[in-house]
Length: 210
Image 1 (cartoon, rainbow, N blue to C red):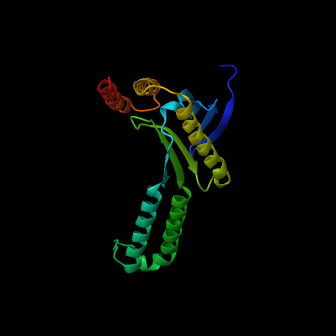
Image 2: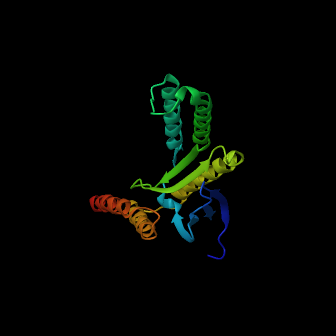
Image 3: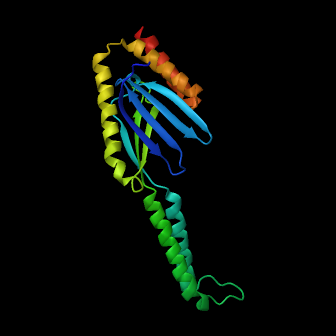
């Protein structure tokens, strides 16, 4: 569509420097362009298939905290002399090793805190498949939180607008949702298992409504 009008956009770069660009056109179509290594994944979603209300979660890389706790435990063992090593004078090494272990543990803890991400997910209306996942590094992209929230708000209001202004029969809407999910599975956006389970659910609903 050459005359399509851009409603809003958002670009996100993850910790691996992979970029994802979201473009909402005509308050109806969300176009996504995502880097996957050397490949570029491009797809379009009719937001009429999405539920208006999103879910927000907070995610951390817990591995950093696990490493920090392991280092603190090792430091405590060394400090208490519970780690006898043949030919090693722990009492003499403790003044050097303990501050190093504590310092590395502190750095791991800070890295864990800095890994905090805000994940906002939009699901399909009937089959509840997570189709749009917006993730932002809270501390790294602190200055973009307002932009992120604004994009989510515009997307939510656009979904509500579509649901009010496009009168589509329930079975037609479910059939359209199933087509979108099939295309997303073929392109690798969602797992094929998600499509198969949602297909069984949607077909069952369409058959019961007929």
